[in-house]
Image 1 (tube, rainbow, N blue to C red):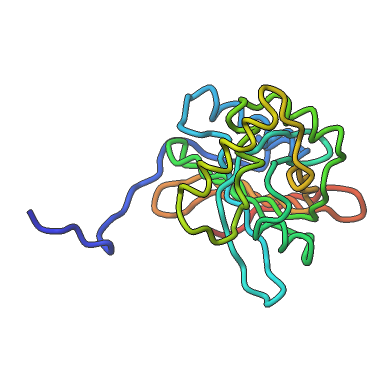
Image 2 (cartoon, rainbow, N blue to C red):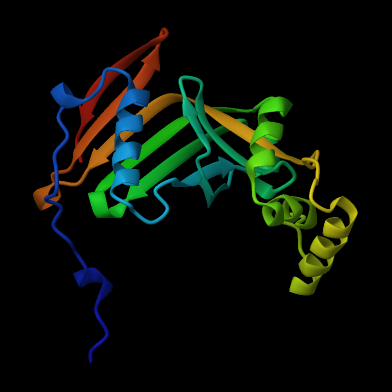
Length: 213
């Protein structure tokens, strides 16, 4: 069987459409609707999003994280503050997020400033995590080189013995909130004539316009 050519891989997007008159005036409300539909469709990891940050050398980097909060204040996720993304956000407190719901032929792109959430919010979320995940936050020096997986297993055993069933939240672990100032909603359409609706914040109000695909 011949190996398929990447240049020949293509798909026609024909599931839905996105029109300016049908979009919510508030982009967070539009996002909440699409997120709910992705969850209801039982997509794999509907809460997974790509997080892009920029280092002090100007180089961008991306990774996949999980959205854990969404309200008028912005989009929340949790991580190790000493990880690469944490260090980059410390230097450049701006980021971009992207959701790609392949089965629905939809993409949402979000940009804005990023701040740490308060300790009480991080404590509350940390307490809801499974015990193994709470121990893992202590055991993993995220983004740092380690000699082998045994380093992680040994560290996890050490912290499990120390804290038993009640590990406190590590001081180096907690939440971030991106406060959006730009959104883009992308709906795949036939003939690559996709629908793209962009919201931008100006003087405290959202403006909305269509972009060419």
